[in-house]
Image (tube, rainbow, N blue to C red; front, side, top):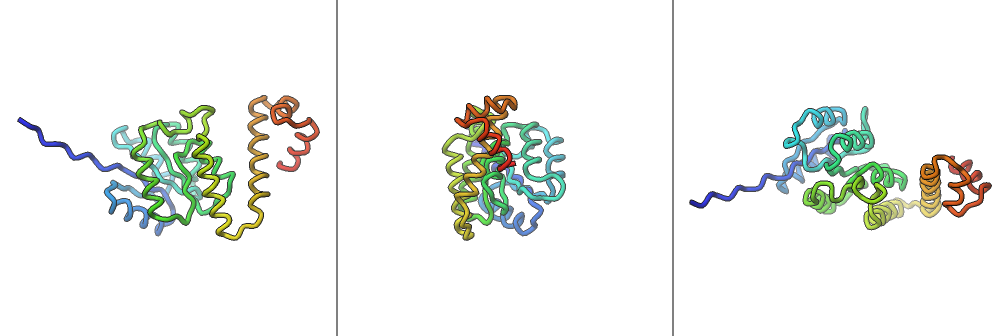
Length: 217
């Protein structure tokens, strides 16, 4: 006897955003494309639901806004990754800056999606996230705990395109300042706060490092 083939269950996606119109657009679009969608207007409610859900009832993907009342998107990202490192999370926000992009990847985001976005691009990203084996594209499983070069360049390009589209004329200065700040923080972390050793790692003199600390403070 030949058993009937089981139809694969649709991927489950949680959308977390306090903007009702954004929730509706994403929920409608993803549902129409075969996803099992649950929407939340609060990060706190979504986190509580996630923690009490058994493993098999947790979503295959989470899409969260950054700026929300109560628990913001980054705090939600950290707490969910602490409970379930393999769950992919896409972080979206209209408040785009390079430091926010880097923080999203540093905290373990699968990808960063700036608003406003093209719905077809969002669908492609969701499909990629749901098709990726658990943990395979997670920042925590990469060397150094960071996104790989390809992801980093892609996010930088996305940020730059949006800044230029908005008429930003100081993009190079903003990017350079953020890069210097991140490099300085990483060097100090790597040397446990020893400024002289951090300066050597960066190829700076001690006076240069002291000056940069004041400038970037």
